[in-house]
Image (cartoon, rainbow, N blue to C red):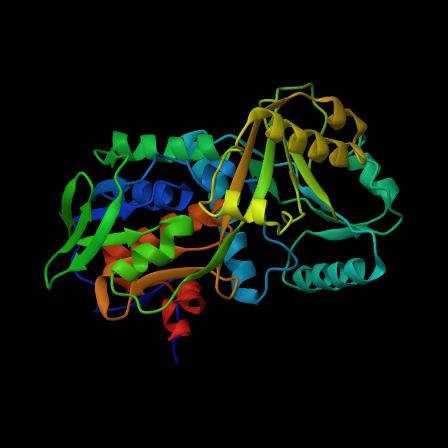
Length: 391
């Protein structure tokens, strides 16, 4: 018996595709649009605001294949994406720092769980390992983990300026003859035997196929397209602080119990917290419409200083850095934590791409989705992530 190619399985179900509408100009929609345009497809990207205006532009932007990425197929998908980032970053000059990551906790149970996870991915060939404080100091001299527990070091990880990367992919798509239309609020998605039709507040667009890459709005758009199940659970907010550029301070992405931070190639620090907002009436009313900005600068600065001070517990210099941008990022959260990728079974002109973390997965999803759409194939690497698992 001939073994299946791990990347491809022929399918006769997909329609011939020359023109595609992509709903969503976040990093996933932009990656798919770019790869489709490279292959000669006529691409139109629609977005209700503009490129990277929502989750992608308000993300911590850590690129990783983590010890916690189970099942094995998900770890493999993320590892493929890290490899694809290296190729794509040369092609589009993407702003990535490949400094690795340090992760640590302040209790024995969490450290033990992480140690077991690192051991598991090592068996699959990952270079990650557990290290002590002294070894961590060699990698990250300015860091005091404030803990005597072991740290996980993942040398293959990196961090990206997700907003700049999204714009680079959109520009690549435009250079290949595609178009971006924003703002455009989608009100309906319909299909016929030969076409897919998207209605918006500025007009109607038609194509051979529609890609739904709508981030936190994926449920609404997918329901318009006839999907009878949700893809995502309710999005959760996280505060992201971007500072003014400073001298080199960090080499890695640092991730711990109550804080995470890294430094971009331009010297700016990205600092975030892991705490959920208080469930008070005031907070719930404010967050109801998923805002990306605070109601006033004073309130935003109070949060920023608290977050920077927490990070300063581990790297004192961070507490003194001046914030440049303070935003609220809303994370798309798949129902089971895993991506949803591929054609809708009874709607061959609808292709879904909904996931967390889109920042990590964008290159591989863009590459494989474009192949599935244009070549009429099903990629075996994506089989565990089809929408059919929710039926």
